[in-house]
Image 1 (cartoon, rainbow, N blue to C red):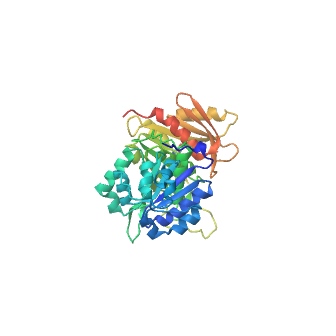
Image 2: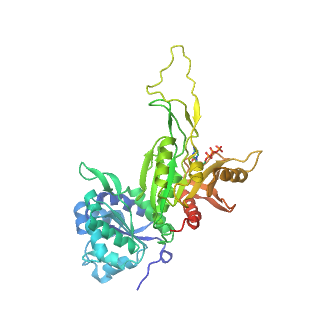
Image 3: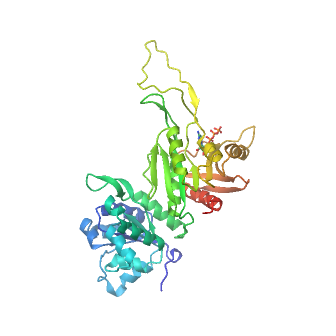
Length: 415
Ligand code: CTP
């Protein structure tokens, strides 16, 4: 038996399986993302997928010939070779039919043969109408595939093929790509150390309204929270992401709850945390809100005087979660942006904040240089309530997210 190994090849080998749903066109963008970032991609469509997007498109974008059946290039034994030599198989979109075949081990075309011979991680990104997704047959097939170690990304909610909306959309190509590359970056490890766990992540910055059109806000981009959500899904968690005013695409397989104000953020984080094993407050809730909200837009005064805005304090969500744990043993994680001053170093302030907030872990960013907001990368120290520290050198927000989950997992309540 040949086993796959990225170390033997300079470029990770990805098999992109495409089954016959209208979302097949979105797989073209996914393919582009893989090839442009240096992956060696073999596209294996089903015959039905070729009804939606033709073989020339896949061949041109991947730089390789494409076939749906096992009768082409038989001398190279493609029905065995493609699966055996892959570092990762991603099936996007995965139809109800394809999931059923995969769950039952059928092998009547090149893709289903490939799925039987692959020993690398296999990711399915289902896309179908809500009724088909929710049908007990599909749900049983998904459960079977997951039991066997396959990663099945929850479909997104939104507009479907017709005029209807619901759960069943293929997540954005960028999000499937991020999920897949995260997996590859972890050496293809299928370590599902968050499987069976529910985690809640907050992200973004809240808005506190003065009137229907004006608000006090902040510059939080939501990037770190979204990276936390993505990486938790890749490690097998069920993830609820409470997002305040974030314009990023929903991460694949994540339940996204959109909020605007700190009060809404608190309500949604609390509600989701009642069934959670961990909650990470990566959001930047406003500490203050206008004391009064005016239903009508505030007009300029005739005499040219400016209105005075009185502020009132918002609840500290993190401190509240830590003091009154919404579920037994839930791990509570906070973030802190600190600068050193004459009263102490960044870490002095961080230790004091961790004690004040009562959380289990505090992710400390030194913002002395004025960076972090909106930046693609990050550098931090993860501080534990026991005084332990893990320094995370400058790197991607995903890399920091992985370290945060590494620190969370040993603290998770026993179930
Ligand atoms: N946080 C929260 N609720 C708030 C404000 C902040 O839950 N109303 C959370 C953030 O999500 C983050 C952590 O608290 O996890 C960081 O809070 P920070 O703004 O640094 O705390 P403050 O108490 O505002 O600290 P400082 O007094 O230093 O501004």
